[in-house]
Length: 171
Image (cartoon, rainbow, N blue to C red):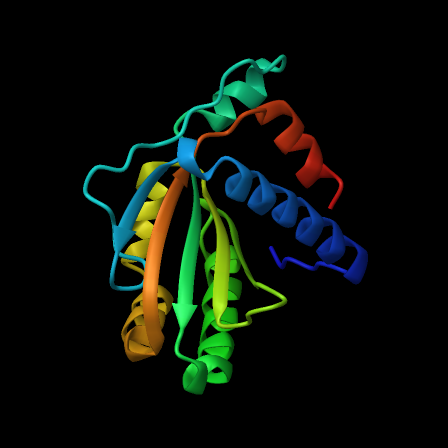
């Protein structure tokens, strides 16, 4: 199945991702944060996210075990363009080839393009662990290692699984 996203859909996903990022920034002290150095490293004590308070039983079951994360990455300025090209390729391959990868949505701060954020959504912990073993992720990890100044993986909890499902239906 080929994924096609038009401009309006990309804008909507971008708006949803920016809303999520603003929530993360506003409530940063209440999130459980993991710090790592290599891109995509698996934190030792990370837990899968579960959804609650969903009015739709199927939606709740679908979200049970889901892993949602924000990757906060700072890139060395002299490698920025090369990094962005490699990340774009990896994100596209992950979503296209891996059924358990719901989102690898990279973006950067307008005022500081070297500060990259990635909204990562996986169907399960197993889907995430499988993703880490794929050739396209391994290529990304090894080719960008020298480009990354810092990496922080922030595991998130889904607050409203039913609405999350509706947002993605609009795309």
